[in-house]
Length: 148
Figure (cartoon, rainbow, N blue to C red):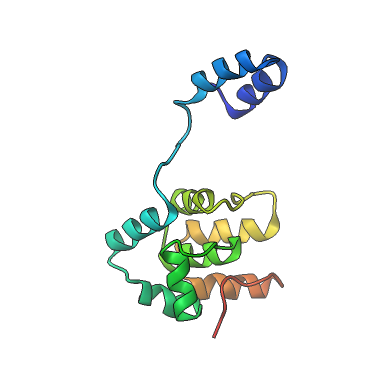
């Protein structure tokens, strides 16, 4: 399988017209994790698997009840900051967090970004949202969610 850089090079250098674009799209349609699942479906499935309710997540995030439910149920957009809070509150793995970020059209975590590095560190070590926010606070960085 080609790397993302290989595909970017091919797309930039070799795809010169719409016919070539169609061929390229056909070729790459099998690459990557192209999910047809919505964020609400994916997150709901993860919560069920972990035995968590939206009320459990609401308590941990400090997000207002109706707003939290609207985000979880896909009735409103989810900011990157709140998406990370919801994900960490549910104890998601790094891959699951990245999938949630992708499904909500939020940017992936970036290891070269200092705040994202702290968040990645927290996720990889299974820190709670409170512990993650304490770590962010100790580094003078913006917290996740709304702390009560």
